[in-house]
Image (cartoon, rainbow, N blue to C red):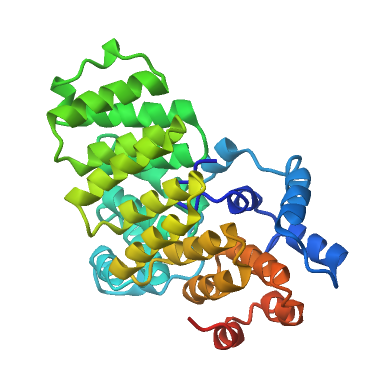
Length: 349
């Protein structure tokens, strides 16, 4: 898994694919078996790899699932414009509340395509990948020409290693772009990673000031496992948009993919400096420390992320494993109880 939206870690991306019961039944089984021992990173990673091989869901099937609207939404009865309210909440970093507002906007048929897109972006930043992908699929259905949606879907499919689908959306991005569709003859480039990289590289040379082009190139180089080139592409994009928190996150994920977790942590920190309530970046910081074997240092970052989105199920699993690897078994009941208040007191940043 490339995981540009997430952490791109060695162990966490495998764990992230395993969405079972809250916190992950594998995490519970592991802790029961290892009990009084301090588990070694390689040991539990290997056991998890064996366990999840037969339990992983089909990611394509997951993508096709319908979006699950919240059962109780206070914004549905509000007299305010829910789309505008969602934008304001998102700007202020209140991601869970923003998601509810955009759901209400969709229910009221207000700017449906853009509401779906914003909803997808909110869920992605709030560590809810399934809902994020479902939102973007609906956004694309509402407006097949939306360039932002096409680019986001290209990234989402790259995260899941759906190479053909990722290439398809990125090529659609070119075909729908008002400038590039007349510049590039899509038929002259075969539908494979190498040819699509050539296509975007030619666009980048013609227009080196379009950050989206370099974002797409970075995504493609991740698909081809050319992480140094991907990093260069994202850095070029950041030279054009230095305050783009999502690009900093993609850079960090790329660095994590290339086993440079120390640099990845620095990139995630830049993302957080720009957007302090970026849940995904908080969790990525934790994973970045875990990748370096610094499990105790990772715990406060998972806790901070969960304090902003206690429904991020995979993060509870990450936290449980990090605490076990740190030998802090006596506080695991707080995780089982989902006592985020007590955990925040125990592990402040």
